[in-house]
Length: 116
Image (cartoon, rainbow, N blue to C red; front, side, top):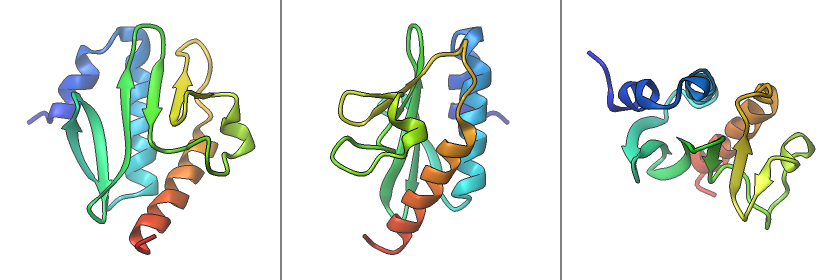
């Protein structure tokens, strides 16, 4: 049986599907207790009743929402991807900075689980 997120990824542009699958796997690895669902029409993850992050396919990139924010400390490895206040944009023709993303997911998951 496929989930809504499986369907979302299957319907994304072919060039972005692998990156979306990678992001999903990073969340599953870094925050295995996160609840996966679609919200606002995109894959979303909740942990301890709060938003961990969303990710989505856009015309020319894949975006991650809510993981980093300009008003907080942004890891150096992710600063070049931060667009707007809390959107990370990744282009499918470049490798995903997987280690930095996974580390940031773990950091935020720990924060949410602690009730911060």
